[in-house]
Image (cartoon, rainbow, N blue to C red; front, side):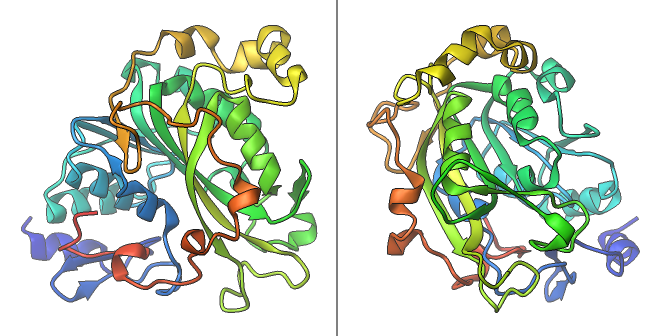
Length: 320
């Protein structure tokens, strides 16, 4: 089957992302053209050349395609079901990229499900934590797969307020979509990142506004936050919370779900992030940054798309 027949076989299917399959032939994705894709913007600052990369919840494979184009040595795309596999195969051929796919079912216990792959220098965990019953269970399962000093992008819906809380999507108030359960407060998201031995090194934030009616809720200061995290040996060291550090030693949940042996046994990654010191895999400030303190920084706020390369549309000419 040539490219023309391949494209015709999927062009009228439902697509999550908008993808250019031939010059000027673009699928109609689920999101609005002016909605920024923050993980994509973060991704281009990660040096993926020669790295092993994992994408969780890949849909048609926009992020895996960009990982491959950025020079990754190995790219593993995943999803709960192979519901986009045909479209993913077309995208691979049209974009001349190579990545693998693995069905993983519910997004829990990933260190066991993906154990055969060893570890990854880079993991994209975006658009996941608000879709699951237990965000901590997901993070516990995925963290042991990240190499020492590796990078993970964690992106999710948040509420811009103080305190360590999760807002439940009661009666669909936050989103009517039936797989949305939780919005994290910003300090809660940061606490979980640090609890699982990572520090935030950078982030972007898109406030929900009336322009995005499916996400905007009057009276709630919410938005989508995409955080670049660096794996560290002990994220709890800098906590003003010795209880959190003790749970790493004594909590049945942590010891059973986070696989401390796999986490401790990961090799050192050489991945670098734009703004790193010359020592790849190092964080100049081991404390990282405070998300709530910097959420109003002008350069971190992305209210709308200013460039199609920052959007949820993939063009044939896009290299990142």
